[in-house]
Length: 288
Image (cartoon, rainbow, N blue to C red; front, side, top):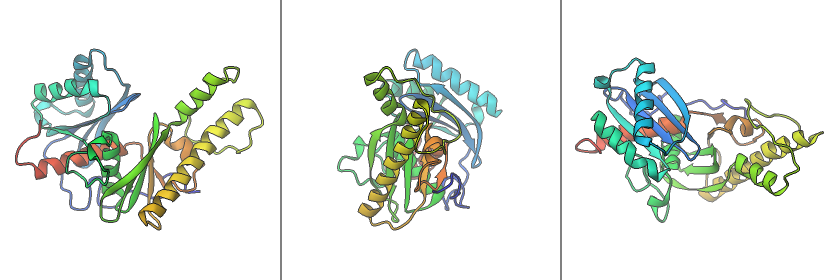
């Protein structure tokens, strides 16, 4: 199996070989269905970060408070900021984030499939989620191309970026927690199982119900990922490439995977940051 971290980011830095440091740190927000991750990135360094449960209620106040806490943690004043980048899959929060960028007077980059930040091979590029675009941007910028990004969160998603830098497609499957939750709902006498921890690496044959459930969750998800990765490589004509895992269950599954070569928990944030860098250098003026 490929040990997490075996394939490190390229020496090019987090946003690619031709990158230069953006003027001023950037607030980066990755809003998933379950978790919101925020980071303050500047000088190709992550200056501060935080994770919160995604909250669509009273979002205007909540996200403004989180942004100001992030600036405080990073020791950065509002006047020093260079912009804001957002990858959001929760439509109800997009408006509050736009208002936040406007209130802070920051140029805003929204990561979307229908922008020109990365060529997208989807029949309808706008259908592709912002997090998947950000993962492709982060993986290709940090690990080179071809590359495959695997996000192990609420859903399991696969993004394949060709040697030419095109996001040629991918796959979506239920996440580990969703799959296990559905099983426990249908078979309520089974015990609840915690999936946390730095990795599983236990035997595929459990000797108790709890260990059997954990083995099925970890080795089962790893088998799903490995199958999708290998079939994706075959479909895209890729013989070998880095396979980068991110998301809350990345370490848990990577410990049992034979294809994952690296775990990068901040991949989506770095991808959104790279998207902002690309957008502000191809747009004639601030985005918003």
